[in-house]
Length: 328
Ligand code: COA
Image (cartoon, rainbow, N blue to C red; front, side):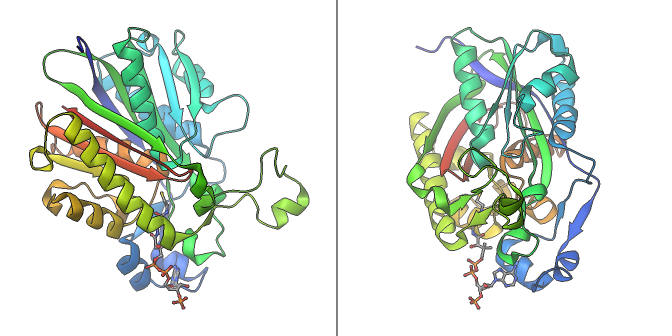
């Protein structure tokens, strides 16, 4: 029997000032505002300036989440930073965030699960809190994806944007908190979205850089189908585990990959658009940051009240996917 539940105590988000519009992209590759809007729902995305980097946005989002949770940085004892665009290989962006925040008691690490990273982090934080290993966890999704985007590849360059979102997780009372959390992966589909260069397999050299091996490569059509199926399935799974149905959900926050993917998943679950968060027109796909940004924007907009059921589902490169159901 679960005696203690973990719940979200505070949220925050941050993104760069820089904006890349569809019109900007139309000057770079053969595309149009009309194509991007109809096929993806995206109108603009945030783009970090050359001197900006991932941990800066993560720290701003994290600080806001800690403040809203009514805590101090020293109260945090675990930092999980989900990212596929870290500041550098070593140390982890988590450790850089830990130092910047002054979270002196916190263990810190990065979590690489692409767009599912935030829900992976939330699931692990939930388990750590319920076992008593952790009192307050800071889970962050933070990305500067535009560094890995090939601005000659019109299929991918229109999709991705930068930003960060964060949540402080801790024990909660009553019927609040995380009711069910599930994460999954299937590495057989790794080539649907990947970056072949930059690691030990294809170490960075002048040749691999010139060949663009460090850029994201994507099989968009195939990914689309797997994304819809896996997000709908995992959503049903967590609802079933909690003995609830999609009708009970006040707000559904899916990973923001494509408005058509969001619509297809919501349709499969019978959740009408009024109950579905959508921020893709303004942010594009911010990978691990998309769900925590969505969560914080929804909190700020007063769309989530105590007692509301919130369903989150994600899907990303790996491939990875996850679902978390919580009572706010
Ligand atoms: N502008 C104009 N035309 C474009 C284009 C762009 N930015 N990108 C692709 N096209 C063209 C293609 O070349 C193709 O042309 P063709 O018919 O002459 O060959 C045509 O548009 C249709 O391409 P297709 O790939 O079938 O389009 P789509 O409707 O599947 O949309 C994606 C493409 C990438 C938007 C869509 O597949 C998608 O969102 N997939 C999921 C991606 C994703 O979620 N990634 C991250 C996972 S977390």
